[in-house]
Amino acid sequence: MGMDPRDSALDAVAVAYVRALLRPKTRVQKLGPVLAAAAFAAFCAISFATVMVLAPPTVTQHLPEDRLGGP
Image 1 (cartoon, rainbow, N blue to C red):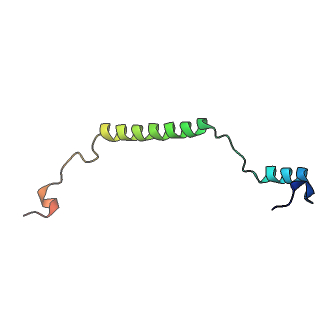
Image 2: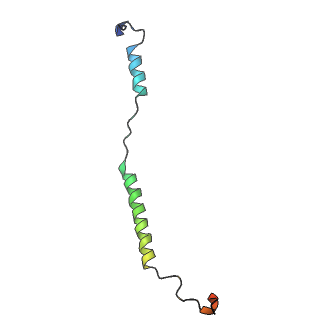
Image 3: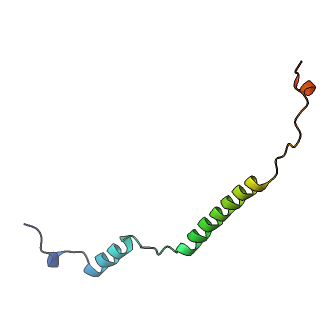
C-alpha cells in the first residue's frame, strides 16, 4: 500500500517543472550542411582521381644503364 499522491508534501506544479527540465531536448538536425560537406568531399575526391589519371607521368626519360650501376 502506497501513499496517496494527494497527501504528498511535494508541489505537483514544481514536480512537473523539474521533470520538464530533466526531459532530454529533441534537436532538429539540419541536413543541408551535412549534404553540402559530403558533396564537397565527393567532388574533391573525383577531381583528384581525374587529375591523377589524366596527368602526364612525372618521369618521361628512363635512366641510362651506366647511371643505374649496371655493367
